[in-house]
Image (tube, rainbow, N blue to C red):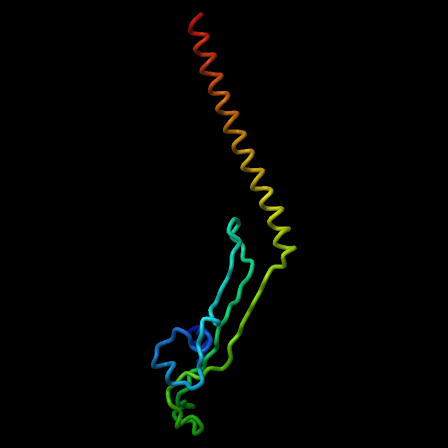
Length: 141
């Protein structure tokens, strides 16, 4: 966000999980754990997401600031640091009824397509065998 909008905000995982040790040690009260992972479970056959937890933390860069050519008095003694503002946990889950409806409609179509595929392969093989048989019979006459 800093480069596109000029806002000194940095996104990270909650509690600066997987950040450099120096950065995490500079902030008191961080308790990163695997519970803060971003996870998305996909339906294996069709690839659509079923359940997900997307977690992110918004951090502000603290530093002394100037307004024009003068230092802003309130920020003059600030160290250069990252300050956690808040973190979000955006979760979603399809209901079992919706998942079953999607699976029924889409997987039935895939099953039908697979049946049609093998039927056409069988018909093609049968036509090929009949063609070879007729070719051999016609040559003998």
